[in-house]
Image (cartoon, rainbow, N blue to C red; front, side, top):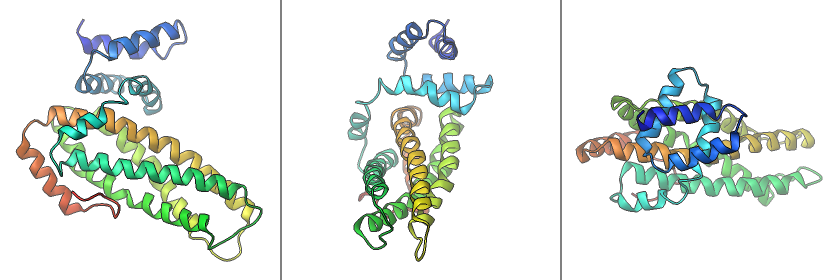
Length: 249
């Protein structure tokens, strides 16, 4: 049995409660020996066999525990302005927005009444605008990077990431619309809606970023070996454009 077959069997067994702790430890030990490309192939096999996106998202979490310290090393290894380096830098900014959103929501939930124009409401509007701005980030992934990975037989991770983009998109726009509300509002309903959106967006977006940084992007760097291809991808990304918060490239 090759590594991919073995990994597929391990991931399947994680859906069972029987000997779960032992299986998780086996998965962690084995995942440390397989590269991002191998994981991508295994994920695609599972999707082809009918495993749903939600189940796949749960299975990815075990692998993520092993990868937290690798993304910065990968970023430093890439030349300035590289497509992947820019995407990672944008992720760093997005994560900072999420931290701010968490704090702003906490403050607003404690307010007794609506205070338009206050610092927290101004921050909420600013953060919501920037989260909607991330659509340019997703557009470059979906139209430039994902198709290039598909050409090389990598379908699983791009499909999962695209599905998550679709899940997040309406919620980001709903948050922006909520932040832009003016005049008379039901403040208790406002707070409930804000809390619901924040508690949806923050976990899924943090997890999404972690998976892209530690699975999708390493796979891309591994399978797209020709620097001329990366140059073409960079030109295509330039044509789409960048987020207002994208660091200088």
